[in-house]
Image (cartoon, rainbow, N blue to C red; front, side, top):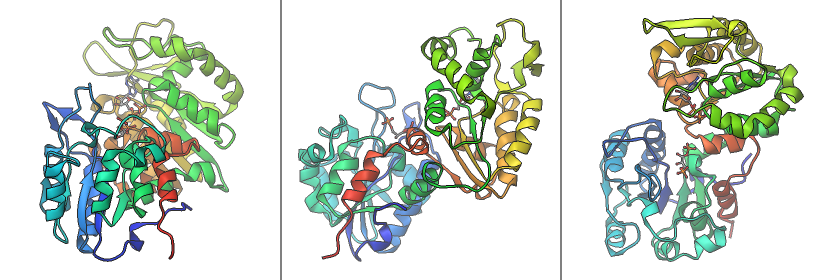
Length: 408
Ligand SMILES: Nc1ncnc2c1ncn2[C@@H]1O[C@H](COP(=O)(O)OP(=O)(O)O)[C@@H](O)[C@H]1O
Ligand SMILES: O=C(OP(=O)(O)O)[C@H](O)COP(=O)(O)O
Protein backbone atom coordinates (compact mmCIF):
# COMPACT_ATOMS: atom_id res chain seq x y z
CA UNK A 1 0.00 0.00 0.00
CA UNK A 2 1.15 3.49 -0.81
CA UNK A 3 2.10 5.72 2.06
CA UNK A 4 0.41 8.79 0.67
CA UNK A 5 -2.86 10.39 1.64
CA UNK A 6 -5.70 10.54 -0.90
CA UNK A 7 -8.32 13.21 -1.59
CA UNK A 8 -10.64 11.36 0.79
CA UNK A 9 -8.70 13.16 3.54
CA UNK A 10 -8.85 16.64 1.99
CA UNK A 11 -10.27 19.20 4.49
CA UNK A 12 -13.61 20.72 3.43
CA UNK A 13 -13.71 23.94 1.38
CA UNK A 14 -10.08 23.78 0.30
CA UNK A 15 -8.45 25.81 -2.42
CA UNK A 16 -6.51 23.06 -4.22
CA UNK A 17 -3.70 23.08 -6.76
CA UNK A 18 -4.16 19.92 -8.85
CA UNK A 19 -1.38 18.56 -11.08
CA UNK A 20 -2.85 16.65 -14.04
CA UNK A 21 -1.10 15.02 -17.01
CA UNK A 22 -2.92 16.26 -20.12
CA UNK A 23 0.10 15.73 -22.38
CA UNK A 24 -1.55 14.71 -25.66
CA UNK A 25 -0.89 14.14 -29.35
CA UNK A 26 -1.03 17.49 -31.21
CA UNK A 27 -2.42 17.63 -34.75
CA UNK A 28 -2.52 20.89 -36.73
CA UNK A 29 -1.67 22.70 -33.52
CA UNK A 30 -4.65 21.28 -31.63
CA UNK A 31 -4.59 18.73 -28.78
CA UNK A 32 -6.37 15.48 -29.59
CA UNK A 33 -8.91 14.14 -27.12
CA UNK A 34 -7.73 11.00 -25.37
CA UNK A 35 -8.16 8.83 -22.30
CA UNK A 36 -6.09 11.15 -20.09
CA UNK A 37 -8.82 13.83 -20.22
CA UNK A 38 -11.54 11.34 -19.35
CA UNK A 39 -9.62 9.92 -16.40
CA UNK A 40 -8.50 13.22 -14.89
CA UNK A 41 -12.00 14.66 -15.34
CA UNK A 42 -13.21 12.15 -12.75
CA UNK A 43 -10.83 13.56 -10.14
CA UNK A 44 -11.75 17.14 -11.06
CA UNK A 45 -15.49 16.35 -10.95
CA UNK A 46 -15.14 14.83 -7.52
CA UNK A 47 -13.25 17.86 -6.18
CA UNK A 48 -15.83 20.21 -7.70
CA UNK A 49 -18.74 18.20 -6.27
CA UNK A 50 -17.13 18.46 -2.82
CA UNK A 51 -17.17 22.27 -3.18
CA UNK A 52 -13.40 22.82 -3.39
CA UNK A 53 -11.87 25.61 -5.46
CA UNK A 54 -9.92 23.77 -8.16
CA UNK A 55 -6.88 25.16 -9.99
CA UNK A 56 -5.20 22.76 -12.41
CA UNK A 57 -1.59 22.62 -13.56
CA UNK A 58 -0.43 20.52 -16.52
CA UNK A 59 2.22 20.36 -19.25
CA UNK A 60 2.28 19.82 -23.02
CA UNK A 61 5.43 18.78 -24.89
CA UNK A 62 8.85 20.20 -24.18
CA UNK A 63 10.48 23.50 -25.19
CA UNK A 64 11.96 23.04 -28.67
CA UNK A 65 9.55 20.28 -29.71
CA UNK A 66 6.66 20.65 -32.18
CA UNK A 67 4.11 19.60 -29.58
CA UNK A 68 5.14 22.32 -27.10
CA UNK A 69 2.08 24.54 -27.05
CA UNK A 70 -0.51 26.44 -25.00
CA UNK A 71 -3.13 24.61 -22.93
CA UNK A 72 -6.09 26.70 -24.11
CA UNK A 73 -7.35 23.81 -26.29
CA UNK A 74 -6.84 21.40 -23.39
CA UNK A 75 -9.15 23.53 -21.22
CA UNK A 76 -11.94 23.14 -23.81
CA UNK A 77 -11.56 19.34 -23.98
CA UNK A 78 -11.30 19.02 -20.19
CA UNK A 79 -14.49 21.08 -19.82
CA UNK A 80 -16.35 18.65 -22.10
CA UNK A 81 -15.28 15.72 -19.92
CA UNK A 82 -15.90 17.44 -16.59
CA UNK A 83 -19.30 18.65 -17.80
CA UNK A 84 -18.80 22.23 -16.64
CA UNK A 85 -16.79 25.31 -17.55
CA UNK A 86 -13.01 25.14 -17.18
CA UNK A 87 -11.59 28.67 -17.26
CA UNK A 88 -8.13 29.15 -18.78
CA UNK A 89 -5.51 31.79 -18.04
CA UNK A 90 -2.43 32.15 -20.31
CA UNK A 91 -0.12 32.56 -17.34
CA UNK A 92 1.22 30.27 -14.61
CA UNK A 93 2.38 32.33 -11.64
CA UNK A 94 2.50 35.94 -12.84
CA UNK A 95 -0.01 38.67 -11.86
CA UNK A 96 -2.61 37.48 -14.38
CA UNK A 97 -2.53 33.95 -12.97
CA UNK A 98 -2.66 35.15 -9.36
CA UNK A 99 -5.69 37.34 -10.11
CA UNK A 100 -7.46 34.45 -11.87
CA UNK A 101 -6.71 32.11 -8.94
CA UNK A 102 -8.13 34.63 -6.47
CA UNK A 103 -11.32 34.83 -8.55
CA UNK A 104 -12.02 31.08 -8.40
CA UNK A 105 -15.19 30.38 -6.41
CA UNK A 106 -16.06 27.11 -4.62
CA UNK A 107 -16.97 24.47 -7.22
CA UNK A 108 -15.19 26.32 -10.05
CA UNK A 109 -12.26 25.09 -12.16
CA UNK A 110 -9.33 27.04 -13.61
CA UNK A 111 -6.51 25.67 -15.80
CA UNK A 112 -3.18 27.53 -15.74
CA UNK A 113 -0.86 27.80 -18.77
CA UNK A 114 1.55 25.01 -19.81
CA UNK A 115 3.75 24.63 -16.75
CA UNK A 116 6.80 23.88 -18.90
CA UNK A 117 6.65 27.47 -20.20
CA UNK A 118 7.49 28.62 -16.72
CA UNK A 119 11.00 29.05 -15.42
CA UNK A 120 11.82 26.67 -12.60
CA UNK A 121 9.64 23.75 -13.77
CA UNK A 122 12.45 22.05 -15.76
CA UNK A 123 15.06 20.53 -15.49
CA UNK A 124 14.90 17.50 -13.19
CA UNK A 125 16.33 18.37 -9.79
CA UNK A 126 15.84 17.25 -6.20
CA UNK A 127 12.59 18.18 -4.40
CA UNK A 128 14.26 20.73 -2.08
CA UNK A 129 15.68 22.65 -5.04
CA UNK A 130 12.33 22.53 -6.81
CA UNK A 131 10.44 23.65 -3.69
CA UNK A 132 12.76 26.65 -3.52
CA UNK A 133 12.00 27.92 -7.04
CA UNK A 134 10.24 31.26 -7.39
CA UNK A 135 7.45 29.38 -9.18
CA UNK A 136 6.65 27.17 -6.17
CA UNK A 137 7.33 29.90 -3.60
CA UNK A 138 4.93 32.25 -5.39
CA UNK A 139 2.08 29.83 -6.03
CA UNK A 140 2.07 27.61 -2.92
CA UNK A 141 0.86 30.31 -0.43
CA UNK A 142 -2.26 30.81 -2.58
CA UNK A 143 -3.49 27.27 -1.81
CA UNK A 144 -4.58 25.11 1.12
CA UNK A 145 -3.48 21.84 -0.46
CA UNK A 146 -1.76 20.19 -3.40
CA UNK A 147 -3.26 17.20 -5.23
CA UNK A 148 -1.12 15.12 -7.57
CA UNK A 149 -3.04 13.15 -10.17
CA UNK A 150 -0.28 13.08 -12.82
CA UNK A 151 0.81 9.47 -12.42
CA UNK A 152 1.96 9.23 -16.04
CA UNK A 153 4.46 12.07 -15.43
CA UNK A 154 5.43 10.87 -11.94
CA UNK A 155 8.87 9.71 -13.10
CA UNK A 156 9.87 13.33 -13.70
CA UNK A 157 11.44 15.30 -10.84
CA UNK A 158 9.96 18.62 -11.97
CA UNK A 159 8.79 21.48 -9.73
CA UNK A 160 5.06 20.91 -10.28
CA UNK A 161 5.50 17.26 -9.32
CA UNK A 162 8.06 17.21 -6.50
CA UNK A 163 8.33 20.84 -5.31
CA UNK A 164 4.74 21.53 -4.20
CA UNK A 165 4.46 18.45 -1.95
CA UNK A 166 7.19 19.96 0.23
CA UNK A 167 5.41 23.31 0.35
CA UNK A 168 1.79 22.21 0.89
CA UNK A 169 -0.11 19.29 2.48
CA UNK A 170 -0.14 16.79 -0.40
CA UNK A 171 -2.82 14.30 -1.51
CA UNK A 172 -3.13 11.78 -4.34
CA UNK A 173 -5.97 12.17 -6.85
CA UNK A 174 -7.97 9.20 -8.12
CA UNK A 175 -5.80 8.57 -11.21
CA UNK A 176 -2.64 8.57 -9.09
CA UNK A 177 -4.26 6.26 -6.56
CA UNK A 178 -5.60 3.65 -8.99
CA UNK A 179 -2.57 3.66 -11.32
CA UNK A 180 -0.23 3.28 -8.36
CA UNK A 181 -2.12 0.33 -6.88
CA UNK A 182 -2.42 -1.61 -10.15
CA UNK A 183 0.96 -0.93 -11.71
CA UNK A 184 2.98 -1.56 -8.58
CA UNK A 185 1.33 -4.96 -8.20
CA UNK A 186 3.81 -6.98 -10.21
CA UNK A 187 6.83 -5.58 -8.41
CA UNK A 188 5.39 -6.06 -4.92
CA UNK A 189 2.63 -8.66 -5.00
CA UNK A 190 2.91 -12.42 -4.78
CA UNK A 191 0.61 -14.30 -7.15
CA UNK A 192 -0.27 -17.95 -6.49
CA UNK A 193 -0.36 -19.00 -10.12
CA UNK A 194 1.39 -18.16 -13.36
CA UNK A 195 2.42 -14.56 -14.06
CA UNK A 196 2.53 -13.73 -17.78
CA UNK A 197 3.90 -10.61 -19.43
CA UNK A 198 2.96 -9.81 -23.00
CA UNK A 199 5.57 -7.43 -24.32
CA UNK A 200 5.52 -5.61 -27.64
CA UNK A 201 5.60 -2.01 -28.75
CA UNK A 202 8.40 -0.22 -30.49
CA UNK A 203 11.09 0.23 -27.84
CA UNK A 204 13.55 -2.60 -27.33
CA UNK A 205 14.91 -0.95 -24.20
CA UNK A 206 11.50 -1.13 -22.48
CA UNK A 207 11.39 -4.87 -23.05
CA UNK A 208 14.99 -5.26 -21.94
CA UNK A 209 14.33 -3.28 -18.74
CA UNK A 210 11.25 -5.33 -17.94
CA UNK A 211 13.06 -8.63 -18.48
CA UNK A 212 16.10 -7.48 -16.53
CA UNK A 213 13.99 -6.45 -13.57
CA UNK A 214 11.32 -9.13 -13.62
CA UNK A 215 12.93 -12.14 -15.28
CA UNK A 216 12.70 -14.14 -12.05
CA UNK A 217 9.16 -13.09 -11.16
CA UNK A 218 7.50 -13.67 -14.51
CA UNK A 219 6.80 -17.24 -15.58
CA UNK A 220 6.18 -16.53 -19.24
CA UNK A 221 7.02 -13.67 -21.59
CA UNK A 222 4.97 -13.59 -24.81
CA UNK A 223 6.61 -11.35 -27.40
CA UNK A 224 5.34 -9.29 -30.31
CA UNK A 225 5.76 -5.91 -32.01
CA UNK A 226 9.08 -4.44 -33.04
CA UNK A 227 10.70 -5.75 -29.87
CA UNK A 228 9.49 -9.26 -30.61
CA UNK A 229 11.04 -9.16 -34.08
CA UNK A 230 14.37 -8.13 -32.58
CA UNK A 231 14.26 -11.19 -30.32
CA UNK A 232 13.38 -13.34 -33.35
CA UNK A 233 16.42 -11.91 -35.09
CA UNK A 234 18.57 -12.81 -32.09
CA UNK A 235 17.16 -16.34 -32.40
CA UNK A 236 18.55 -16.47 -35.95
CA UNK A 237 15.58 -15.41 -38.10
CA UNK A 238 16.13 -12.77 -40.82
CA UNK A 239 13.31 -10.44 -39.73
CA UNK A 240 13.15 -6.79 -38.68
CA UNK A 241 13.18 -5.16 -42.11
CA UNK A 242 13.09 -1.36 -42.11
CA UNK A 243 10.75 0.13 -44.71
CA UNK A 244 12.37 3.00 -46.60
CA UNK A 245 12.63 6.09 -44.46
CA UNK A 246 12.06 4.12 -41.24
CA UNK A 247 14.69 3.24 -38.69
CA UNK A 248 12.88 0.99 -36.25
CA UNK A 249 14.94 -2.16 -36.37
CA UNK A 250 18.55 -1.80 -37.51
CA UNK A 251 19.44 1.06 -35.20
CA UNK A 252 17.91 -0.65 -32.16
CA UNK A 253 19.56 -3.90 -33.18
CA UNK A 254 22.99 -2.23 -33.35
CA UNK A 255 22.60 -0.75 -29.90
CA UNK A 256 20.92 -3.67 -28.12
CA UNK A 257 21.64 -6.98 -29.82
CA UNK A 258 24.21 -8.06 -27.22
CA UNK A 259 21.72 -7.60 -24.39
CA UNK A 260 18.90 -9.22 -26.35
CA UNK A 261 21.05 -12.25 -27.14
CA UNK A 262 22.05 -12.71 -23.52
CA UNK A 263 18.45 -12.27 -22.28
CA UNK A 264 17.37 -14.91 -24.77
CA UNK A 265 20.03 -17.21 -23.42
CA UNK A 266 19.25 -16.49 -19.78
CA UNK A 267 15.44 -16.61 -19.94
CA UNK A 268 15.00 -18.59 -23.17
CA UNK A 269 12.83 -21.25 -21.53
CA UNK A 270 10.40 -18.53 -20.36
CA UNK A 271 10.31 -16.53 -23.58
CA UNK A 272 7.79 -17.41 -26.30
CA UNK A 273 8.37 -15.84 -29.70
CA UNK A 274 5.98 -15.48 -32.61
CA UNK A 275 5.71 -18.55 -34.88
CA UNK A 276 4.21 -16.55 -37.73
CA UNK A 277 4.13 -12.93 -38.87
CA UNK A 278 1.84 -10.77 -40.99
CA UNK A 279 2.70 -8.43 -43.87
CA UNK A 280 1.01 -6.40 -46.59
CA UNK A 281 0.84 -8.46 -49.76
CA UNK A 282 0.97 -7.20 -53.38
CA UNK A 283 -2.82 -6.64 -53.39
CA UNK A 284 -2.65 -4.64 -50.21
CA UNK A 285 -4.21 -7.46 -48.16
CA UNK A 286 -2.89 -9.11 -45.03
CA UNK A 287 -0.57 -12.00 -45.78
CA UNK A 288 0.92 -14.38 -43.20
CA UNK A 289 4.09 -16.44 -43.20
CA UNK A 290 5.59 -19.01 -40.82
CA UNK A 291 8.74 -17.65 -39.16
CA UNK A 292 10.58 -20.92 -39.91
CA UNK A 293 10.12 -20.41 -43.65
CA UNK A 294 11.50 -16.84 -43.76
CA UNK A 295 14.82 -17.13 -45.57
CA UNK A 296 15.73 -13.52 -46.30
CA UNK A 297 15.27 -10.14 -44.69
CA UNK A 298 13.19 -8.47 -47.40
CA UNK A 299 9.70 -7.95 -45.96
CA UNK A 300 8.39 -5.57 -43.32
CA UNK A 301 6.28 -7.50 -40.82
CA UNK A 302 3.55 -5.49 -39.18
CA UNK A 303 1.86 -7.94 -36.83
CA UNK A 304 2.21 -11.37 -35.29
CA UNK A 305 0.29 -14.07 -37.17
CA UNK A 306 -2.89 -16.00 -36.35
CA UNK A 307 -1.00 -19.14 -35.23
CA UNK A 308 0.94 -17.03 -32.76
CA UNK A 309 -2.25 -15.60 -31.28
CA UNK A 310 -3.64 -19.14 -30.97
CA UNK A 311 -0.48 -20.19 -29.14
CA UNK A 312 -0.63 -17.19 -26.77
CA UNK A 313 -4.33 -17.53 -25.88
CA UNK A 314 -4.10 -20.68 -23.71
CA UNK A 315 -1.07 -19.30 -21.84
CA UNK A 316 -3.08 -16.20 -20.96
CA UNK A 317 -6.17 -18.25 -20.06
CA UNK A 318 -4.07 -20.29 -17.64
CA UNK A 319 -2.50 -17.31 -15.84
CA UNK A 320 -3.16 -15.78 -12.46
CA UNK A 321 -1.92 -12.38 -13.61
CA UNK A 322 -1.27 -10.93 -17.08
CA UNK A 323 0.52 -7.64 -17.75
CA UNK A 324 0.58 -6.21 -21.26
CA UNK A 325 3.18 -3.66 -22.32
CA UNK A 326 3.07 -2.37 -25.88
CA UNK A 327 1.14 -3.48 -28.95
CA UNK A 328 1.90 -6.68 -30.89
CA UNK A 329 1.43 -5.03 -34.26
CA UNK A 330 0.45 -1.85 -36.06
CA UNK A 331 -3.05 -2.03 -34.58
CA UNK A 332 -3.97 1.43 -35.90
CA UNK A 333 -4.39 -0.36 -39.25
CA UNK A 334 -7.22 -2.87 -38.91
CA UNK A 335 -5.37 -5.40 -41.09
CA UNK A 336 -2.60 -5.58 -38.51
CA UNK A 337 -4.65 -5.44 -35.31
CA UNK A 338 -5.11 -9.23 -35.07
CA UNK A 339 -2.25 -9.79 -32.61
CA UNK A 340 -3.01 -6.91 -30.27
CA UNK A 341 -6.77 -7.40 -30.29
CA UNK A 342 -6.45 -11.19 -30.00
CA UNK A 343 -4.30 -10.90 -26.89
CA UNK A 344 -6.53 -8.19 -25.40
CA UNK A 345 -9.59 -10.36 -25.98
CA UNK A 346 -7.88 -13.33 -24.35
CA UNK A 347 -7.03 -11.14 -21.34
CA UNK A 348 -10.59 -9.77 -21.20
CA UNK A 349 -12.04 -13.29 -21.16
CA UNK A 350 -10.09 -14.51 -18.12
CA UNK A 351 -10.81 -13.67 -14.49
CA UNK A 352 -7.11 -13.15 -13.80
CA UNK A 353 -5.55 -9.90 -12.59
CA UNK A 354 -4.98 -8.08 -15.89
CA UNK A 355 -3.23 -4.80 -16.53
CA UNK A 356 -2.82 -3.11 -19.92
CA UNK A 357 -0.35 -0.28 -20.44
CA UNK A 358 2.38 1.28 -22.51
CA UNK A 359 2.04 4.51 -24.40
CA UNK A 360 -0.58 4.00 -27.07
CA UNK A 361 -1.81 0.53 -26.26
CA UNK A 362 -4.77 1.65 -24.17
CA UNK A 363 -6.07 3.29 -27.36
CA UNK A 364 -6.54 -0.13 -28.97
CA UNK A 365 -9.18 -0.94 -26.34
CA UNK A 366 -11.34 1.99 -27.36
CA UNK A 367 -10.57 1.62 -31.08
CA UNK A 368 -11.79 -1.98 -31.19
CA UNK A 369 -14.76 -1.56 -28.82
CA UNK A 370 -13.35 -3.72 -26.06
CA UNK A 371 -14.77 -3.11 -22.59
CA UNK A 372 -12.33 -1.49 -20.18
CA UNK A 373 -14.23 -3.11 -17.31
CA UNK A 374 -13.05 -6.53 -18.49
CA UNK A 375 -9.52 -5.60 -17.36
CA UNK A 376 -8.38 -5.06 -13.78
CA UNK A 377 -6.68 -1.88 -14.90
CA UNK A 378 -5.91 0.01 -18.10
CA UNK A 379 -2.98 2.37 -17.60
CA UNK A 380 -2.72 5.74 -19.33
CA UNK A 381 1.01 5.83 -18.59
CA UNK A 382 4.00 4.85 -20.72
CA UNK A 383 7.36 5.57 -19.07
CA UNK A 384 5.92 5.60 -15.55
CA UNK A 385 4.19 2.25 -16.19
CA UNK A 386 7.48 0.65 -17.20
CA UNK A 387 9.24 2.08 -14.16
CA UNK A 388 6.51 0.86 -11.84
CA UNK A 389 6.58 -2.61 -13.38
CA UNK A 390 10.31 -2.81 -12.90
CA UNK A 391 10.11 -1.62 -9.30
CA UNK A 392 11.85 1.69 -9.91
CA UNK A 393 10.69 4.50 -7.62
CA UNK A 394 8.68 7.38 -9.08
CA UNK A 395 9.89 10.81 -7.96
CA UNK A 396 6.40 12.33 -7.65
CA UNK A 397 5.09 9.37 -5.64
CA UNK A 398 8.02 9.66 -3.24
CA UNK A 399 7.35 13.39 -2.93
CA UNK A 400 3.66 12.71 -2.19
CA UNK A 401 4.70 10.32 0.56
CA UNK A 402 6.99 12.97 2.05
CA UNK A 403 4.33 15.66 1.72
CA UNK A 404 1.62 13.62 3.38
CA UNK A 405 -0.29 15.82 5.85
CA UNK A 406 0.58 14.95 9.46
CA UNK A 407 -1.80 14.72 12.41
CA UNK A 408 -1.33 17.77 14.62
N1 LIG B 1 5.88 -4.78 -36.23
C1 LIG B 1 5.70 -3.48 -36.03
N2 LIG B 1 6.21 -2.58 -36.88
C2 LIG B 1 6.02 -1.25 -36.68
N3 LIG B 1 5.35 -0.73 -35.63
C3 LIG B 1 4.83 -1.57 -34.75
C4 LIG B 1 4.96 -2.99 -34.90
N4 LIG B 1 4.34 -3.56 -33.86
C5 LIG B 1 3.83 -2.57 -33.10
N5 LIG B 1 4.11 -1.37 -33.64
C6 LIG B 1 3.70 -0.04 -33.14
O1 LIG B 1 3.97 0.05 -31.76
C7 LIG B 1 3.12 1.04 -31.23
C8 LIG B 1 2.74 0.65 -29.85
O2 LIG B 1 3.65 1.08 -29.08
P1 LIG B 1 3.25 1.37 -27.57
O3 LIG B 1 2.18 0.45 -27.13
O4 LIG B 1 3.01 2.82 -27.42
O5 LIG B 1 4.53 0.94 -26.96
P2 LIG B 1 5.88 1.74 -27.06
O6 LIG B 1 5.79 2.67 -25.88
O7 LIG B 1 6.85 0.64 -26.91
O8 LIG B 1 5.95 2.44 -28.38
C9 LIG B 1 1.88 1.10 -32.05
O9 LIG B 1 1.64 2.43 -32.43
C10 LIG B 1 2.20 0.18 -33.23
O10 LIG B 1 1.86 0.77 -34.46
O1 LIG C 1 3.32 11.54 -21.81
C1 LIG C 1 4.11 11.31 -20.90
O2 LIG C 1 4.89 10.22 -20.83
P1 LIG C 1 4.73 8.87 -21.76
O3 LIG C 1 4.96 9.29 -23.20
O4 LIG C 1 5.81 7.96 -21.25
O5 LIG C 1 3.34 8.32 -21.52
C2 LIG C 1 4.25 12.23 -19.72
O6 LIG C 1 3.40 13.34 -19.87
C3 LIG C 1 5.69 12.67 -19.52
O7 LIG C 1 6.06 13.53 -20.55
P2 LIG C 1 7.64 13.75 -20.88
O8 LIG C 1 8.15 12.41 -21.37
O9 LIG C 1 7.68 14.84 -21.91
O10 LIG C 1 8.31 14.16 -19.59
